[in-house]
Each structure stands twice: as structure tokens, then as C-alpha cells.
Image (cartoon, rainbow, N blue to C red; front, side, top):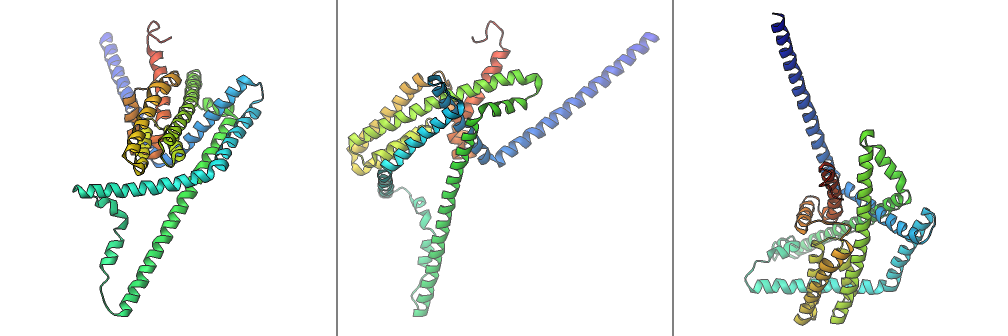
Length: 381
């Protein structure tokens, strides 16, 4: 009887323990799901701000990498090396602005006029072939009804219609001017925010690294240190390689278009170099702009510009990227392109531009945990 009683008590205790474990698991799972949903909501709500901060961090990593490279050549204090790097970059930018500012402004205006005229030519070509191009006229949709409602009448009616049209057009001009002004102020403000964050991160990288590690639990701090250092090293190598690639794309595109005889070759080279920061998508957009701008010089020039675009793309994809970025990143193109499209659709231009560094961070973490879980004989060296 005592044995049966003990067995019954043990069974009851086991059931109670299992029930408590199940309740605990459900509670932890529910809290985790709520926290994950709250994190997603926070990211979605403040995506633009988070991307802005991440861009500032990337700039800080780039400045820190160049400061470290300078330290290998000259044993100077970190603050002095950072100051030299910033002064050199500012001198290069100022030289481009002062020496080529007039050329850039003139070529930018010519490029804008050329692209607008070529869009008109493309629209006329599509109209002749029976393709609906009404979406090209969305900007004039408000003007057409206003014009159609004007009917001949007394002079007073004409005066009132003229005053109403004038007031409407004046309001549209003011609204468009305000939008342009606010857009310009927003872009300039974002630029200075990224610049300030980059300088502060680069000035004291050790302080922010220590603060980030301090937020990790003590038992996971060693693992977090390894991951943070690997992410920092990967981003530094990738940024240096990306800067070299962008400079090469700019020079080759500029010289190639100048030899072909394309107007605005310098500004086209600048946009090709800047868009090279965005893999795949940036090259396609840059090539489209180059070919569209080259149509004004004839089909031969457009075909030559298209051949130049293919050559630059091949140089970037099959020569520069494998050689320069081989040690920095190794992400399959289809995976990267799919991740770019996903972030571009969800978060816009910020997601499209920063997809690769975000993917690099995710890859470093996945590689680390996979190597940690792998058997010692299968773990990568």
C-alpha cells in the first residue's frame, strides 16, 4: 500500500511539474511573440530613422578603416589621423566642387534636358505603335479639366475664369516650391545627420564598441565580442573595396563616354560611380540613364554607350568584385538581389541602398553560429 501511495504521489507530482512546464513554455512563447511583434512594429514605424542611423554607422566604419590604414603608415594619435583623413576627403570634395562645379552644373542641366526630350521621343514612338501612354500625362490631369470647363461667355465670365486660373496656377506654383524646398532641406538635414554620426562614431570607436558589449549579458559577452569584431572587420573591408570599385566605375565611364563623344560624360560618370554602391540594381539604373542620354547623339553613339555599359558591368562583376571583394563578402547574387528587392519594396530607397551591408551582418552571424554548432572536424579553419 505504501508503494502504491508513493507511486501515486510521484505520478501526481510529475503531472503537476509537466503542467507547470507547459504553462511556463506557453507564457514565454507568448511574451516572445509579443516582443517580436512589437520589434517589427517599431522597425516599421521608425524605419527611416533607423536606416539614417545605420548609414551614419557605416560612414563611421569607413572613416575608422581609413584612419587605421593611415596608422599603418604613420604612427600618429587616432584623433590626428582622423583629422588628416577628414581634411583630405574635404579637400578632394572641395576641389571637385570648385574646379568642376560649373561643368557639373552645366552638364547636369544638359543631361536633364536631354532625358526629358528623349522621354518625349519615346512617348511619341509608343503612340505611333498603338501603345497607351496616358500615364505620361498624369502631371497635366488637373490642367485638362480646367481648360475643358471654360466656355465662351460674357467678358466678366472670362475675367473671372482668368482670375480663377491665375489663382489656381499660383497656388500650384507655391505648393510645388514648398515641396521642393522641404525636400531639399530634408536631404541636406539627412546629409549632416549622417556626417555628424559618422564623425562621432569614428572619433571614439572603442567607446561605442564597449557600450554595445556592455548591453550583452555577461555569460554571452565573449561570444558577442567575437561577432561584433567580425562584423566590424567585414564592413571595413567591404567599404574600402566598394570605394575602389566606385572610383574605377566613375573613371572608366567618364573616359569612355568622353571618347564616344557623349555630352555630360562627367556627370554621367559621377552618377554611375555613385550608383555602383548599390549592386545589380544600381548598375542597371546607371546603364539605362547612360543609354537614354546617348540617344540624343544618334543610334551609333547609343549603341557604343550600351557596349560601354556592358564592358563596365563586366569589369565590375568579373574583375573588380572577385579580386577586391573576395575576402570581404561572399554572397550569392540571386540571394542578394532577392534581399534587395524585398527591402526596396518594403522600405524604399533606404532599403535598396543598404541591403548589402545588412546582408553582410546577417551572414557574419549565421556563419558564426553554424561554425559553433558544427563538429570540430567539420568546422571551418
